[in-house]
Image (cartoon, rainbow, N blue to C red):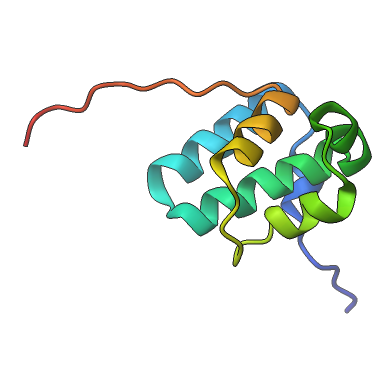
Length: 95
């Protein structure tokens, strides 16, 4: 039996899937999960395209979107805008 490595980027092929994936990670993950998810989305769209839209180099993007990195918020914000994302804040019920 031959198997292939699973790559979530292969399944992020429309805006609805991208939004659902990122929202799920934002709800359930930690900061490194969110960074990794944004990296998967950027890979699915194309790092060259994201680099052009953000003004960042491809190597800088790969470095910043590594789950072990600590990118600046400005970098994450630029990449989110480039992939067509927006940040919204919802109030949470008091506990």
